[in-house]
Amino acid sequence: MSKATEDWKEEFDHEVVAYSRLRPIQGLTIPKLYGTIQYAKTRALILSDIGGSSLSTPDGAVLDEQDIEPLLHQALISLNEYGVCHVDTKLDNFHLVADEGKDKIMIVDLESADFDQTEEELAYTAKNKTKSLLRQYRNHLKCLEHDGVLLPRRPVRR
Image 1 (cartoon, one colour):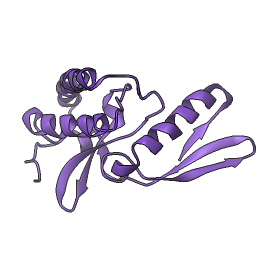
Image 2: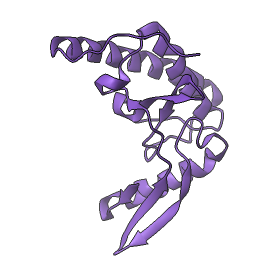
Image 3: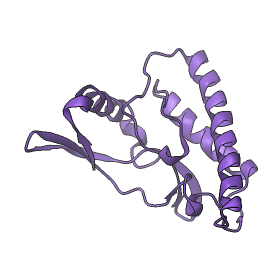
Image 4: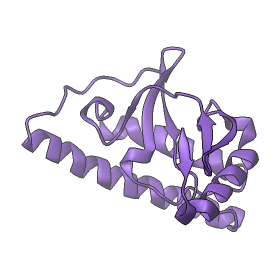
């Protein structure tokens, strides 16, 4: 559940628009939006539980870079197909999940999604955001190793 505060009203409304535009890939690349509620002047999104683990956690950092790269790129371009660019590209917004035994990435936090890019800009941005996420992932793996909490790598499930 995602809650809206007074400071986040505009971002909350923007996230609702993003989920509406991305309806065809809800449950596939982003959580399903079941609806919104309001209680005691606080609005919230009711979203599906996507399971899996954030790439920012040890449980989510179990694939090699060459295996995670195409999964990240595919997730980003699936948003692009609907004219949406994910702006908040940090590891905790990307989750490694299993779908019928196959690995995939699901994306959360759409409140700052960009709807104003051309097709060319979206393609360029997806490529660069994939590279940025890979750099973050690489650095995260090094930190996990340094802290002694790096889990063994496993093959990607296809």
